[in-house]
Structures are given as C-alpha cells and as structure tokens.
Length: 153
View 1: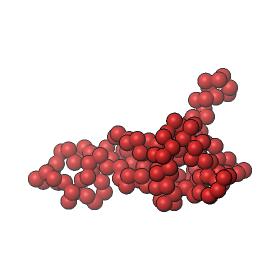
View 2 (view 1 turned 135 degrees about the vertical axis):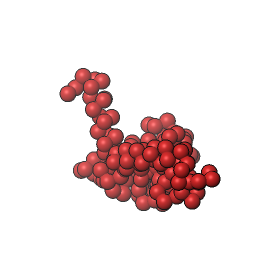
View 3 (view 1 turned 90 degrees about the vertical axis):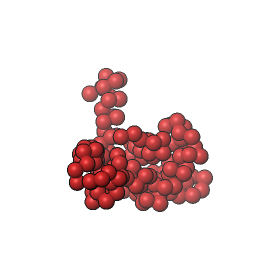
View 4 (view 1 turned 180 degrees about the horizontal axis):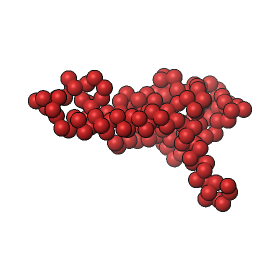
C-alpha cells in the first residue's frame, strides 16, 4: 500500500491531535497553523484535509482567534482505517479486491483471477491492521519510543 500525501497528512494531523488531547480537556482546540508547523505540512493543503475530516465527523472546529480543531471522539474510538476511508474512501489495492466487488474485476474470470485472490488477501490483512489500530495506539507507541530515547522507563 502506498499512502498519498493527502492520506499521510490526514493521519499525521489526527495523530498529532490525539497525542496532545488529554482526557482532562478532550475538546482542547488546535489551530491549523500550529498543526502545520509541528508536522511540517503545507498549511493550505492541511486546511483542505482538515475540512474533509471535519465533514466526515472525525473532527470538530470552532471559529475565531482562539478557535481550532478537535477530535469529535476519544482517540481510542478512531481507527487509522476510518481516517484513510474518510480521506480516500477505500483501502483496496485494486478495485475488485474489496468486499463484494468481483464485478469490478477486468479479467475474464473474476472467480479464478489469481491477482484478485492475492489482492483480496492483502486487503483483508491491511484493513484488519488499520481498523484495529487506533489513534491512541499510535500515540502510545510514539510516547514509549520517546521515553526510551531519553532514557525514562
């Protein structure tokens, strides 16, 4: 699987928000400018990505000088698969590899198409990992590595 910049920036921004949102202040606001600077993402591009994530219901926002973006659900309730689907709509490596999509296969016999069979296996594995992995899981992994890097338990 190859993540487009669009998907990568969406995931990085959501992970950024998850890692900085606390249970004490779950709707803490983060400006697009701050996310852009912290994650080295072009701000105009990021604003488009954040708008799509907002329309998908994964983000909320408040306008104004002290406004910004926030996760609409706990980071434990948002999977990487949900974010990617919100941005791109699919995880399938080829159109006919997803659930119930052999009719999209361009080969002569979808039932015996070797490529479709293998890509369906890839899709099932990939979707399983991305749908099981939450923003909280990624944030926890990052924090563990950072703690090890600075020598803290």
